[in-house]
Image 1 (cartoon, chains in turn green, blue):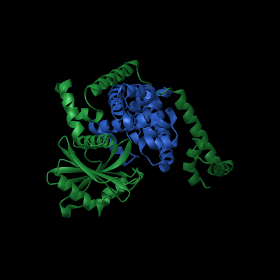
Image 2 (cartoon, rainbow over the protein chains, first blue to last red):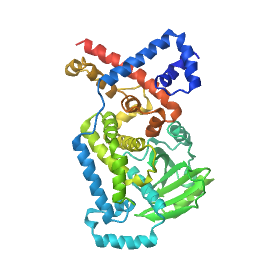
Image 3 (spheres, one colour):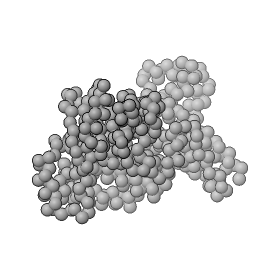
Image 4 (tube, chains in turn green, red):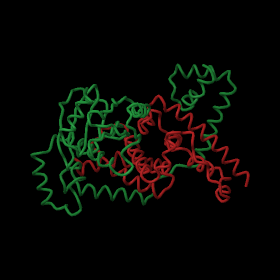
Length: 252
Length: 175
């Protein structure tokens, strides 16, 4: 091992993150390298300094109290409404009556898709709405697929399919990272006339192939399906037929 | 699905990590008032998404949500700070008025100033590793940095911190 390689490896060694083989290899290098020995000492004294400085910021009693209250409140709301994924849409302050909730439950019995799907859908629509707030739509704004694709490099542990479909009426406008179901996902943004379409992409985690699905909720349309080992979900206020068309373009 | 039973589970599994949440948010946002608001928002989000938590590392799960909420907040309120993301070498110069310089003679103050002047990407890996004691795997999970690059990110972050500390100490001596 040379010093150049050791420069990074030394951190893994210092943090106890090397496997036995690499650790032994590094130690052999360390034995004969005064420079790396000095670096290691420097790392140790920096850590000591940080630990002695008491920099850890604990939650104040005030914050604890607020969080607890907030959760108690949220629980009450959930009990009154029908489920967590619905309340974000329907539980407006003026709408919190039991009668309305009962009506909602009745409607849901007929229209609600299976529960996990409905939670995911709500989360996707949430993400779509969030993305439309000023400054939230892109992390990288470009109509060039060769700019957008490399941007995801190193930010995700998979490579999303990125292509521009301007010729077919769906210009690529940009991309960003988002979080769905606790996982980082790629979000591509396409234009469709005056609408934006969010395309969420992440690797399939389910072994079984789920059938394509689509639907509408709270004024937004969504289409979901799988393609090339990826789960792809489109959300927009554009027409369902537009979403299906874009999805089949991506599918190719 | 979130019924009183889930509330109890949430309180048992997730809320014990509120200190970790407060710590990460404080260091990402660099002040207490903003970070308290964001922690509140993040725990509420966590609670709403709790049914998506299928066991495992509750601290990493919560910190991931806290981190994302922090970045969303920064994007909205202090987008300039995130510009450094694209060039991690660019960083703010530690502020240099006499009052802060005098304070920086104190070692703890110097460290705080130096850490606060790093880019958020560097700051978060340092805070997670040195203050929170996270493994590389957990750091990857929380920040979304591929596990293979956690070590090199930490390496660059520590080097940057070391340089900044030297600058801060030099500036403090000059008073």
